[in-house]
Amino acid sequence: MPADPLYRWTHPEVSFEEAEAFARELRLPQVIAELLLSRGFDTPETVDLFLNPAIEQLHSPFEMLGMATAVERIQQAIARREPILIYGDYDVDGTVATVLLKTAIDRIAGGESIVRYHIPHRIREGYGMQAGVLADAAGLGVKLVISVDTGIRAFAAAEEAEKLGLDLVVTDHHLPDEIGGLPPAQAVINPNQTGCPYPNKDLCGAGVAFKLAQALLEGSTIAPETVQTKLLPSFLKLLAVATVADAVALTGENRVIVSIGLRELAKPVQPGLRCLMELAKLTGDQPLTATSVAFRLAPRINAAGRMDIASDVVEMFLTRSPERGREIAEKLHRLNDERRATEQAALDEIEALLAADPSRSEEGAIVMDGHGWHRGVIGILASRVVDRTHRPALVLAHEDGEAYGSGRSIPGFHLLDALTAIHSIAPLFTRFGGHAHAVGFSLPSDRVPELRQSLGIYARSAMPAEAMLPALHCDASLPLERITPALLDQLRRFEPFGHSNPEPVFCTGPVRILDIRVLKDKHLRLRLEQGNASIACLAWSRRMHWPTRLQELGLAVDSLVELAFRIRENSNPNFGTAIELELCDLRPFDPAQ
Picture 1: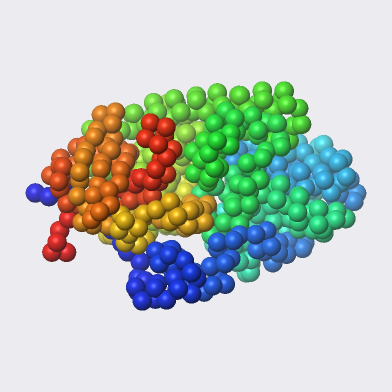
Picture 2: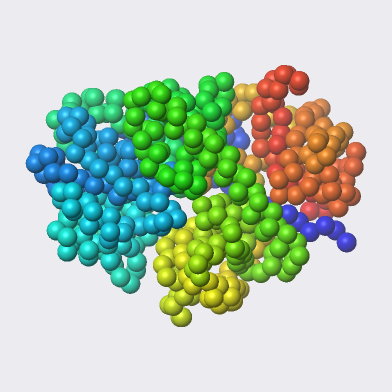
């Protein structure tokens, strides 16, 4: 019996003739023209904007509903020297949003800090604004509260602010409550609110805060040239980190933000950021990419909110003291090591549970819960379960009779809609919120079995059958002989890669396997041949054990295969700088197909 497929391969609907004509018009290789067409760039003008991101492509912040009102109120506070509280969040998005907005307001105020900030403790306070914090702020003379990366569903907190005589400006990117509407506030800035014409609906929370900072700076007495050429690029440096960490779409304005931000991030000025990048081994030896930020820098910043006090991150970004900056950076580095160990211990338990009951992996959605799991890592654990099972997953940690959960989803299944539907039938949650791909929530521990049953029923009825087998999108067919350093240089112009702008995957076949080497008992290094071209291909055992997979497929030396791959440059001194492939999937070549 043939082995079950790992993926269903999909291909773009781009005609050879159309791509050939477009390649001639652009004077680019045809495979590059195919990639551009498949991603919706079908005119020289749209191609130019995509391949050459520039700060001039940023949208005007005043296109955002509520922006003018918010700017006017903040300008009043600055003029009157009224204390302002920025109410943030404990992840990369929330801490960076706090830093950007505080820096902008302090700069406009002439260096006089009128801004306080509060970053909640993940365990003691949880997500969102708390009435007690607002009361303390009012007692200290604060008149204006600005939420960042939070607040769109904070109805009770907004009403409490009103009672305390606090003006509230909400900046957020999470989806509003369709039934409850918007919280009472002086202004609500969120591109996802009904009636907002702002073109980019995919800004992260720090992105929304940046647009407010941009509007304030552009409306200040600071020279426009200084704002455009110095301040905004400097802000994009941190905003790029938050945008990558929040896994929002890297298209349009977000692509501009990350492209310019990575360039600025390569020359960090803040001593704490510079030290943290050194600890993350982002020292300039290799080009800085969205991937390296996502896997090396962002986890260290997130570790503070997951394991300790996230306000340290804000201080690290703001301090001018090299000693204090290094002290905090080293603490974040240690916390990240602690986070990894904590995460691995819980993941081992989850994998044991899945192995003991394989039927769980076949369910429409997976709900895993455990006692003693750290609430700071349940979101990461949910992502790991999705990676292993390709099912929507909720992971919950029990504490004192309450279950705190985080969820991640797959393409084709809107997770927030799922929780909303379940809750509307029989109210389950103490709180919940999020978006299509990620949610956070809590509920009484004794109701977790009900959640598992309800989500399973909903998923079986609402999830498309094709979503159960992950799709591997092959952007174009590419013979081995056309893989060159020049082509790789052209592909780099598509960076930064991320959500909605993935790194291109190519397919080709038939290809003959010339050699198979097992690396570290689980990875493979293949030598492949097609016509007169041969090339090395690395198969990393992440989702499956590749040596075992080859046996299941009945493949050996001299077998003919079709493969899906990404193109890599290997600068390992043991092999010499060379082009090689990274395997995504392969299957026996079938001449009948």
